[in-house]
Length: 325
Image (cartoon, rainbow, N blue to C red; front, side, top):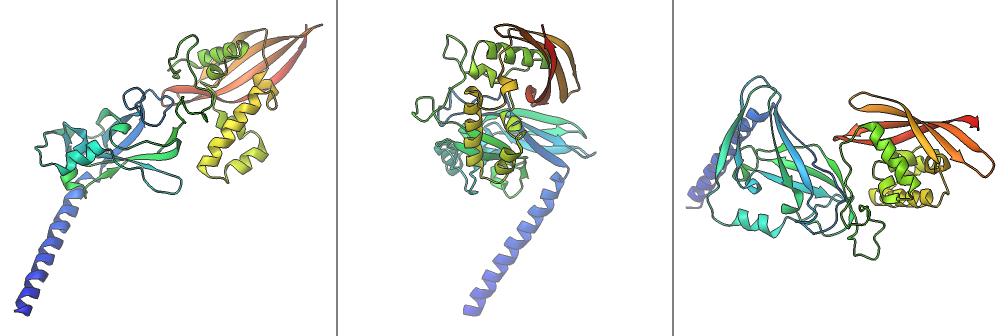
């Protein structure tokens, strides 16, 4: 009797193994598929506040092969994908109660089958906070798992690239730093897809008006920090959380005029002399005049800019003195 029972168990295990093998073979059908993510209308993110402060991510599925790629996409995307947010200690944030309830409740999952020819893409936008609980301010690493055969076949999945996700303290928290808002309103500032010369122009005007929130809006502070060899060496050796603190400290030093005096100098007037750029890199040359009690000084600034996810930012600069007037 025991031998017969053991034989039955072995048969079941063999059948299960064969099923997994068949599933793994089917998974090979997606070897030419890829999924990528990037922020959509990137903003400043805070814990909670799902409706007022979503973390919208633009998801793209691409057929990198020559054969037709077919996959399923659920009407309720919770059955097609998962977001993972990793802490610096490599632990993950928990799923939302909504996602857990959907997947543990017996329900009909409606979906569409989508076909992509070679080189074609399919994109859509999802709010990360609909999938995972973002409860604490910190720096996380965000990635996505896409299930081309739906969540019931989650052993078949495509993993995306990783994004750095910075969650700042809530505006009401005592520990929060400045919150970029538009003048005379409570609307949170968001960088816009404007030309490099407009980026530099708005940054200089913001400095003239001492609007630090707007000044930092298009400034790649991390890259400016790395111009300092001592700070750069320390920056690359510390944890992600410490890097955030270093950047905030660097901003504070800028606002107190303790470092990088050229980039924070306030011109009386300025004139954009020349702008040139490729799809990803560019330079904006500006003549700036600085007024002192007995004379005016003229300088030529060359701002280096680069474009990421549609947004141009200033990441470096040089200054040439042109004499006095």
